[in-house]
Image (cartoon, rainbow, N blue to C red; front, side, top):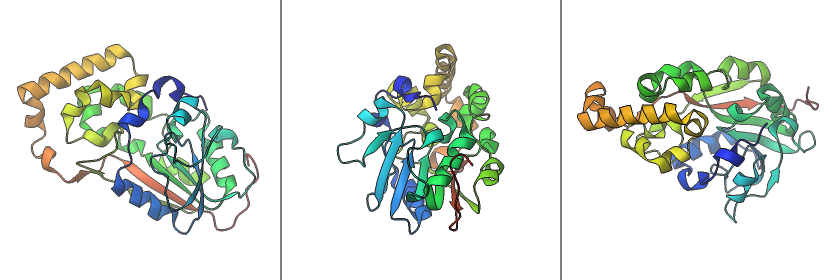
Length: 257
């Protein structure tokens, strides 16, 4: 896994905060785990405060942004976790798998170090056409994200006993990930918001500028609201975000099996 956030993660923590509803869903998925390894932990937004958490991340920039009270964080890569087999009750990964250089290997490593379960908060690429930002303004996101996010079938092929839970994004989502502002389109015009969203840092600047100019024009003219009547008032929207919970059931997995 390349430490991509050393380049694109500056000021990340200022734009990204845990949404309490998503945090509750992640905590429920962790179940009776008492020790958790957070893989690709970043600034640690969704690390449960009531559990014994260890974090690992390859980016010194992201580790630097972790709050003083956050769990200890070790520099390391998902594909080669520096822990013995079965070191934790659970392994957790939050919106990070798509940044790994070898997703299958990283998932097998999570499975190896966890005794009870693996929990992912991820995005289902089958939902690429559900978000107006992609369909109407940034179709380039599909070319970027669809190949790098594992499908639910991909995950089930590596992780045993997979259960998938829909996580609709609330209208007033407190996190700042890509789909968080589906009902607040003006937010995407703010460079500070875009700095906290990886796709805006990874696509060419000219592509982003063109998309934002079109969105700005449609908001000024009222065209966006005409195409999306009532969307601003909807309570939540399913954009393909999912919690994937794999129960390991006391199996033993060796390194890189």
